[in-house]
Image 1 (tube, rainbow, N blue to C red):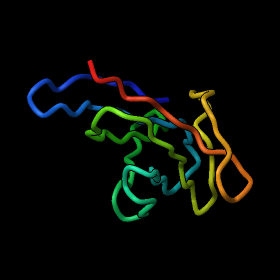
Image 2 (tube, helix red, strand yellow):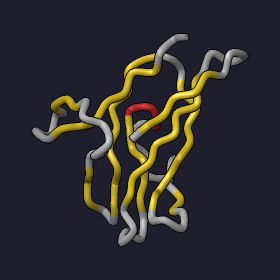
Image 3 (cartoon, rainbow, N blue to C red):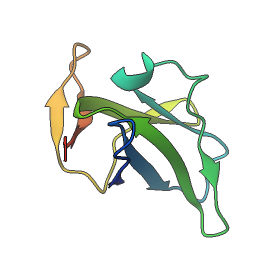
Length: 98
């Protein structure tokens, strides 16, 4: 699930991604906003088993997935999906301009 907050100065918006996966040992946020690079957005787990990552994104549409212990998982809190070039689905979010 993602939450979006505004940052008026830069035009970017704070987007908080989260995934409940208490058994996971590693979760990485991957998307077109970070060129699907596994080194750019590793997530941190809180005491309740929820993994979180805050990103600053410009307004626009972004596709993403979670890499959970080297397995692709979609965001169960976001029902917006689209087909990807591998024949599976990515989640997507739209970051508003205002």
